[in-house]
Amino acid sequence: MIGEGIKPNIVTFNVMVSACAKRWNLEELDLILLFMEKEEGRFETNMYTLLIDGFTSSGKNEKAEKLVMKMHEAGLKADAHFYNLIIRSYCRRYGDGNGICKRNAKQGMNIDDAMFNRLVDGFCEKGMVNEAIELEVRMEKDGYEIDLLVCEKIVLELCKLNRTEEARMLINALAKRGGDLSRLIQTTLIDC
Image (cartoon, rainbow, N blue to C red):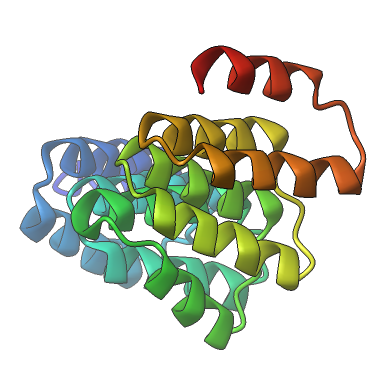
């Protein structure tokens, strides 16, 4: 294309970035990004999506975080999906999401209810119920609202570990907040 005098556009760059990200060919990806910069190619949300997805799926979380910061600097909205990708990648890699929460909070990134709920959910999936409870308590303290389905997962994990008293205490705490706990209570009675 270049030999024929045709300049690549954002669609061309998106296709090349997507191909490299899916193959985890990060060396080639770096070359494409340098070329894009040279050609004064502008990043747009789809490009960030491709890059962040590629970096998090290959365990390059720090690069993904830098891209989210770059989005903020460029005035683009980084929605929960980007943060969830990063959080999920850290949880997959290290099994611990608390560090990412503290780090992002210090950097001024907004962590929303959905991201906290995903972390608690991830801890439960890995059988890390103590960490899930710790995060749930922190969420409450910081004014976040935990999803009842996530609480149900914590309760079920507690029941699996024969920690029924703690499961009941969690249900009682949730009942004090209000809301429909009928499904949660029914699940607990069946599984505990």
